[in-house]
Image (cartoon, rainbow, N blue to C red; front, side, top):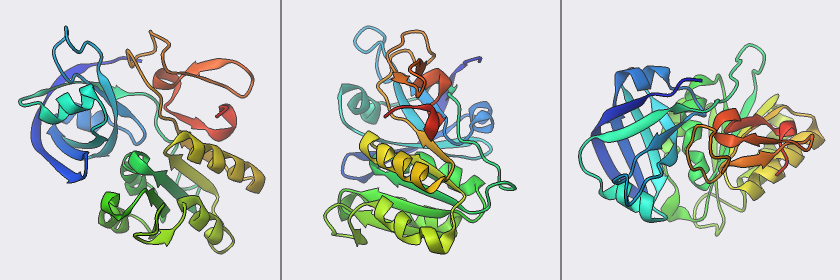
Amino acid sequence: MSYQVRLCNVLQKKEIAPRIVEVLIEQEELAKAAQPGQFLHIKCGDSVSMPLRRPISICDAGEKQLRFIFEVKGRGTAALQAHEGQLDVLGPVGNGFTIDNERYKRPAVIGGGIGVYPLLFLTKRLSGARVYLGFRNAELVTLEEDFKAAAAGVSVATDDGSYGYHGFAIDLLKQDLEKEGFDIIYACGPKMMLKAIKEFAARENIPCQLSLEERMGCGIGACLTCTCKTSDGDHVRVCRNGPVFWSEEVEL
């Protein structure tokens, strides 16, 4: 797998919800190479004070532009929010989702928290997807209209019931299973959510792909920071072997 570092022009940067920042960048080669499920490894500060890049999933891509969304949680993402000028980007990195619209005609897409954002690019490539989005509260509900424009249907749940369904997105997916007859599930979100989806998919005998979120150092498989355990007791690197895996491949 080859990796390229590119300087990208920042076309737009804005806060779309509390501590949730959307960035639009322009770099034609990067945009054309990007696939749903891959991520960007972004330099957030100078090499001395902040030597490690930050991995951020690709939210959407066109012919020349890419969109990514991140939560400001620590020093790196705070520096990225404050950054001015071109961005130094390594990417696209990782293996994305398997998309086969001939084989899988009734896809379900489910995301939670910041795991929602990588699923928009995927949904645009799928045919007739039903989408289930989970957020902590109404203030954090984002991209709903974008998903509605790309999907056959969108359902939203919030933990506190302040918007949409009061509960978890997986509850809505379960309610729709008999009616929709899903033949594949794609998911991204917190580990506990992915664990529940993995178990549900196994019970219902539905193929399932999970995009894992792990702390990363190098982003290219050299440092072994982001390893996860596989079902056969081995270990794989999320950045290089993933971040997308078939659910039966990994232990959560």
